[in-house]
Image 1 (cartoon, rainbow, N blue to C red):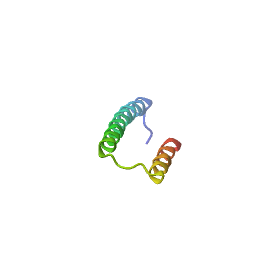
Image 2 (image 1 turned 60 degrees about the vertical axis):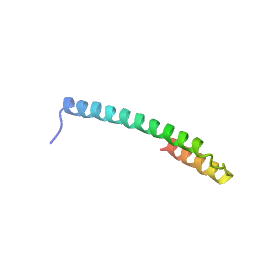
Image 3 (image 1 turned 90 degrees about the horizontal axis):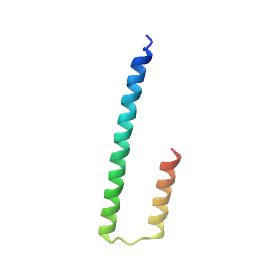
Image 4 (image 1 turned 45 degrees about the vertical axis):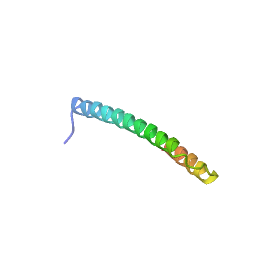
Length: 62
């Protein structure tokens, strides 16, 4: 069974909205995590900074 272009277009619009909402939630989570980290006064070890950089690089490459 094939879908009409209108149905696929509606699904793509719904997907676009869902991805925009996910992006906003991820941004809010990032800010929350950063604020929590800054408030914790945790020491910044080289290993912590390297792990953070690796996580950021992985997120960008996907």
